[in-house]
Image 1 (cartoon, rainbow, N blue to C red):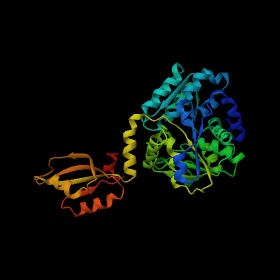
Image 2: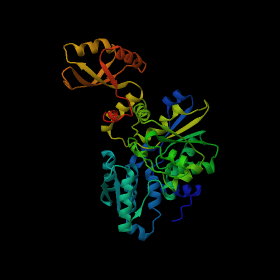
Image 3: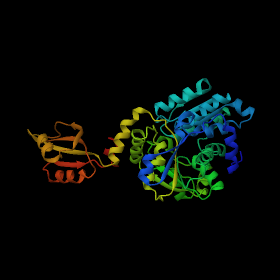
Image 4: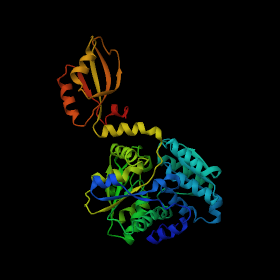
Amino acid sequence: MDQVFSASDVDAAAARLTGVALQTPLHHNERLTAATGCQVWLKREDLQVGRSYKLRGAYNLLAQLDDAERAAGAVCASAGNHGQGVAYACRQLGIRGRVHVPSTTPRQKRERIAALGGDSVELVVGGETYDEAAAAAADHALRTGATVVPAFDDVRTIAGQGTVGIEIVAQLGRAPEVLVVPVGGGGLLAGVGGWFAAHHPEVRIVGVEPAGAASMAAALAAGGPTTLPELDTFVDGAAVRRVGDVSFPLARACGAEFMSVAEGRVCTEMLDLYQVDGIIAEPAGALATAALDGLDLRPDDTVVCLLSGGNNDVSRYSEVVERSLVHRGLKHYFLVEFPQEPGALRRFLDEVLGPDDDIVLFEYIKRDNRETGAALCGIELSERDGYESLWKRMEASPLKIQLVAPGTTAYRFLV
């Protein structure tokens, strides 16, 4: 197929999606408006069918298949959200579908794929990353003739996802000064950014990636899509090892600027969205708003953040809280060598810990030789500034204490 994209493709996609995709709300956010001094609006694609924008691209592609292609079926790889969009579209269009997801896909997303697809879709779980799932989907297509429905690397998918931009302008009544878009494989940014570049080139577009999966930044540095050697899959909806060959030049051409956000910062924003705003966002859904405190914004700016998805498994919140505490400097881990003598632990509590320091993890190995015993100790502080004084007391203590620093091999066993 000819992979030429234009803004008119987005307009055509909007017509196909009428009555299928919801026009999701554009909500003004008081918390972020107060924090930034700008007028911040959230485009609530977490309220879309399948709780993400992915339905738009999947349906737009599948609706354009001819009779022979429909009869051969469809297949896709997904981190979860795209699979839900494909499942729903297949069911609506009467197409047999198959969805491959990696084992890291949250259970909640797997269950929703099965529910939205019903008897029309087969769910296959395998591999640890999106890229492994994509390889399995491609193999199935070669063997059966099924049409591959890319999550981001096809102009039909890109055009469907770009329809979010049309709605933003219609709902706001004008184009915003700043549009902040989460970036995984680049399809959403290519579609929305391409439409804005054609119709409202004055808009400042910011693409936001998770720091542990910054494949767009790597592509820009290399001059083309390149494979990341390592990948943090926590922000599963945007954890793509390599951006698309089709989406990359389109995303670059829209004139966007790019930035990355630490996974811990994303977790903190997820908690703020939930506790303050009453919004359940998945990690990728919180990327855009998590980036606001790192942007240089003008007080009179109208800023629209695209909240891309709300498929978050409640069982993940313990990890979300943990990562947020570590990111904010409120939780630290230490290896402590205690002498094998009465009162050693009591002296640690009285002389090293502050009155507001809380031990949240203590795993004690009775002894590693005749004189000492090691303990892994997790300490939660009431405020970030308390760490410096805590460490000074540790250095002054006769105990041997070692910080388990973020990024070390030992630390990865904890968080």
